[in-house]
Image 1 (cartoon, rainbow, N blue to C red):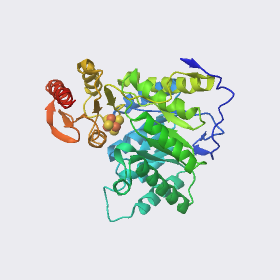
Image 2: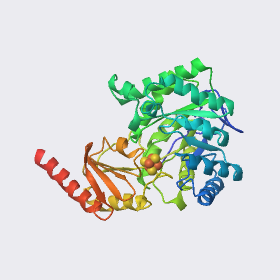
Image 3: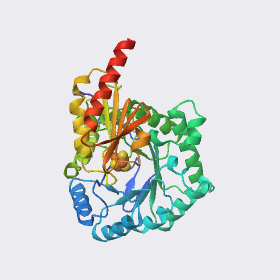
Length: 386
Ligand code: SF4
């Protein structure tokens, strides 16, 4: 770990403040640390237990997954029994906003997800619907852009993913301006820490007053998950960029609170002048990315599967190959597109992709053998081409 005298030198980039019930986000306030429940939301006792555990470890805001009306009913009950600040991620169903709004403090929507349903309704109208709900219930919003699910209309007309992400962001900020709504933060996430750094720096220059939520998606298991996240966060926090953050780690339910501990530690280290990362994440060798899992995970064997994939691929440490392991069909198909090998879980099988092409669905017993075969074949093909 290198020590630099950063303590007195870091000045947060000035932003406006965003109110999440009694918590203020922005440059005048401490950096808030978030995490997410990985329990099934309808399992109210387990979800409340996880919320309490995250609160005990200092979570400022806690995300709960809601995908159905039954989840909404569970959320209403959870709301009655905890004082935690809750946030829900809308995924593709923007209309869910009106159902969850009475029970949460913040809503996240992904601009890339507003194009799939009700295609005849302009995206602006969908955003207006969400903003109206937020206004009525005095909620904060997060515009959450993700490299794995960019707005297709921006991807088609942009040079690269960064340009597409920034254009999408600009569009939604313009919608917010038109609607006269300011109580929102923005996140620009990728599983590549270098992309997270350049995206957020570019965003901070373009929109200096808007608070930023930092995150590296699918950072994976420890210790690599922390290393990737540190690379991005240290670079950005040292520039005063980042007002709230989440560390997305693949962890079993009962250890989910470690996301909070790692997040807090990174912030404390940066502000104490203790830096561990090199400025650039040199992406050499095997790159294993895996989602942090959440209540949407389709089979609880997911975390074990991710660990097993890590074990069987250890022999390929020095190969420049990316393997992505994802917990469900919501983000699995999109987030595995750029990987050499991509796996995403269904309840009884695991889908396997090679460089964006689906190879098939394999049982949980078969999948590891198949991944090993594909890995061997990829390495052999690379050697033959060298
Ligand atoms: S891929 Fe699915 S299970 Fe994993 S964190 Fe994302 S939504 Fe949750």
